[in-house]
Structure formats: C-alpha cells, structure tokens
Image (tube, rainbow, N blue to C red):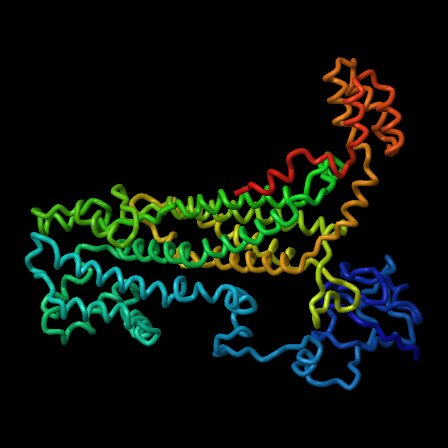
Length: 556
C-alpha cells in the first residue's frame, strides 16, 4: 500500500506540497490516486496541526457520475499520536495565560511603559492615574482654601496658619499609598471625583478647625470643575517641564549642525533630480527655523480652566450665597493656579486649547518626520556616514549593515504620536449639549501622544550623534552635475540682452551629458562683456551656493 506524507497549513487551507486550496466540497477522484498529492475536504481535516499520514486506498474510491469523490476514500492516521492538547501546545507554542503579572518593562501592554519606558517615565507622575488623583486633590484643597478667604462665605472662616499648614501637608505628602486609598473608596462610590471628596473628609475629620467645614469640600462644584483644572495643571506641567525642554534639546542639536556645516556645499535635489546647490548647514537651518517657530507656538498656548458649576452658569453658587461675586471669585481662583480663565463654558471646559496645543505638537512632529526622512535619504546617498556602535547588530543575517534605525524609529513613533494627538484634537472640542461622557475616557490618554513624541525626539537626537559628514561624497556628486550651472549662465545672458537664453540652455543641457569643458566652451561663444565671462568661468557647482552659508549662520 503506497503512503503519502503531506503537511497541512491550517491558516490558509493549503497543502504545503502544492498550490491548490481546498475550497471545494469534493476532490476529484483522480487527485486521490497513489503517487499524487492527496487532499481531503477542509471540513474533514482532523483538528490538529501536526503532519498527517494519508494512506491512499488500495482500491479506487467509489465516485459519482461526474467523477468526483462522493465519500472520503482515505484513512487518516496520526503518527505517535499524543493528545490533542499536547499537540497544540507543541505546534503553536501556546503559553499559559497569567492574569496577575506585575507591571514591568516585560509585561506592560503598551511600549510607552514597556520597551520605551526610559523615555516616557518622566511623564508618569503627571499623566498616570496617580498623577490625575494628585492634581484633583490639589484643586479640591485649593478651592477650600479659597472659600476661607472670601467675603460672604462666612460659614468657612479664615483658616489659621496651622490649618493651612495641615492642608498643604495633604498636598505635599500625597503618595501612591494615599492614591490607593482613593481607589479603594472609588470601588464603593463608583465615582472617581466623589472618592476624592470622601478621602479628604476622612483625613481632615480629626483636625479641630478644618473638621468644622468639611462639608464645604467640593462646594458648588461639578466633577468637571475639578477635572478640567486638574487636566490643565497636568498639561501645563508636562509642557513646561518635559515637552519644551525636549524640543529645545533637539533644536539645539540641529543648530549645532547648522553652524558646523554652514559652508559645506551640497547638491540639492528637487523632485529627486539634481538642482541648484546649497550647503548642508543651510538645509539643517531650514528645519531648525521651522521647528523653533512651532516650538514657540506650543509655548504660547495657555491651558484654560473653569469652576462655574453644573452647566457653567453658577446656578447653585448664587442660590446658596447670592451676595457673593462668584464670577470674579472663579476667575481669581483659576488664574491663581496659573491657568487662563474661560468665562463661557457648559458643564465642561470645551477643550479648544487642548486641540490647539496638540495640533501644534503634531505640526512639530510632522516637520520632524520630514527631517528624519531627509537624513535617511542623505545617509542612503552616502552624504552621512553612521558611526558604528560596538556590540550593535544591524541585521540578523547581513553582518555589514549599519542601518539608520534611530531616524526610522523616530518616524514611526511620530506617526503613533500624531494619530493619538489628532484624535484628541478632533474629538475633545465636541460634546453633546451641555455635556456627554465621551471626553472623559479620551482625556485619560493625554499622555499618550506626548509620550510617543518624547520617544521620537530622543531617537532623532541619538541618531544625530552618530552622524559624520562625508565631504568627499558630497563633492563627488557636485563634480558630476555641471548642468546645474545652466541656471546662472542663462540669467547672465538675460542681463545682457541675449535672446531666448532659457531655451538655448535647455537645448544645450536637457537630457544631455554636460561637462565642465562643454560649459566653458559655451561661455566663450556668448556675446557678453569679458568680466561677465570671467565670472562664469570661475563658477563651479561647489561655489554656486548663493547666500546659503550666510543664511545658515544667522538662523537665530
């Protein structure tokens, strides 16, 4: 009895021994003859991925009138057959799922806190759940202190220095342990901001002075009064302490290259083809200038805040204390936190400033993607060499490779950042009527786009430190493209009244090989003054760079 050993791929329903697929309910009887590739209907393949021994029957299988097999005519046997579960684990590499792994670089779901945690860890105290709770506590305490200072809210008398000190201690000593206390309360309340209120009441109940006014914690506030101010403080801290310094490091590194390579001539490429020369420093200056302007735009956007109650009208405030200037008090309070006051809101601060901020960061990132791609291209052309790092591997199979991985990593993470930033900036300004909850879950991702941005900035910086200019390679390209001097020659011809200068130079250069000698011969035929000819004779692709070097040195 002849036997055939055939492997099946369950992922594509295809016999590995041929290209046919089992899409038919039947298999032609001729395909089951001994010595040919053997098939079974897909629905009858045993539920395991091991190799199957398919023994063809000694006698041909019964067939229908159309020549197709009407019943399976092969015996399916499993060699050294283990149990089905054992086989799946062996073939598919199945691992036991564990639901209680400690969070670490290896177990984090997001690379922000895993593989790239070193770059984003500075954001953890700001944008984590702990960070949000801490800022909420700060806002609640500050609001209670504000009430104690206000004329007309006599039920909250001015706090003594000791009371203020105790309240400050709650803010300054807030810890992961305290945040866990809040989370424990939240398991009962199922409301995160109310849990803050109960946490503070519990911690202040034994204070002889503050305990008398604990019911004024969260007074006249909706949850979003606390949340929007906490989010504003989080963004303010992140931008001032992390984002802008990271942008500045990148811009400073580019500026250093701008000055260092200000005088190094380089062939330009427009549409990927040779164009009028520039200098390497001037090309760095272009990005340097753009990124600096966008950085300043990011810095100019002020987080806003409101504390105007359930629908932004101070309804409860004026019923409880009609004699108090609540609008003035709200503005004083918001600005005292370092935020800009927004007088026109619903239940929520409308988040327009967040959209502006994230759009500005996304624009910075988009420009940086262009820079990453340009440097990648210059490395490919050989204009830059990358300094190999001892121990690094460029390819698992090609030992010679030194890849531009830092710029590729940066580009990929900038794309991730902009995807998140773009969604937040498009979604957050939209809310149904006076408030819906769609912004709440999105706002928990404030740190995501910023985190991926920081990873990218660090990658670009790392890549820049490995670059070394190959001036010989730059010169080689310039010396092989004398046709770029057609532009200045035809401009001089225009000056001295020669007819159709563009058309003549187009005919002379386009699609033809142009050399130094052929250009010099052309110059000698021109009816222009001798000093003009002398100037053109002295011109080379390396010196035809205009004001590039000067522009690079004075970018800022």
